[in-house]
Image 1 (cartoon, rainbow, N blue to C red):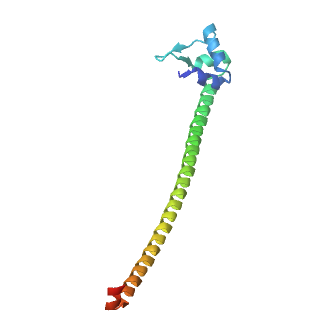
Image 2 (cartoon, rainbow, N blue to C red; image 1 turned 60 degrees about the vertical axis):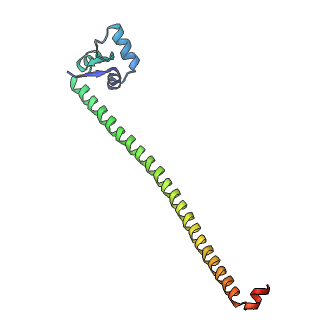
Image 3 (cartoon, rainbow, N blue to C red; image 1 turned 90 degrees about the horizontal axis):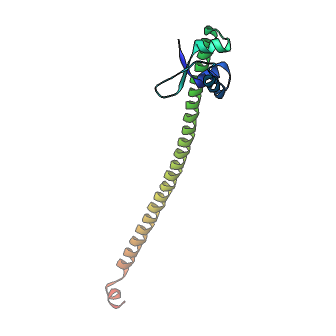
Length: 137
């Protein structure tokens, strides 16, 4: 048969884990320890103690496993959505940084052009002065 953990057994027969452990200690449920030291209970033993048939317990066990697998997927989907939100916020932040840097670049280009025009005007003014004006000024 199938051996299951005390937590799985408790959820299967809808009692607390402590009750299952207490019943094992009192000898009401026979269980064996695995290599890790945790209790393993046979499905037929749960059926004997709690009055379920093996088929009923197998159906409940498969329903619990389906719930666990879908809740695991839901958890993964939730984590993925949270990651997506964080990443989209980071993308927006980076876009705003890029936009501000582009503005700085255009301002610097305009400033450079203005300075170049000013420099050219100063060169033209020096050229306009005559020879004697350059000597005596």
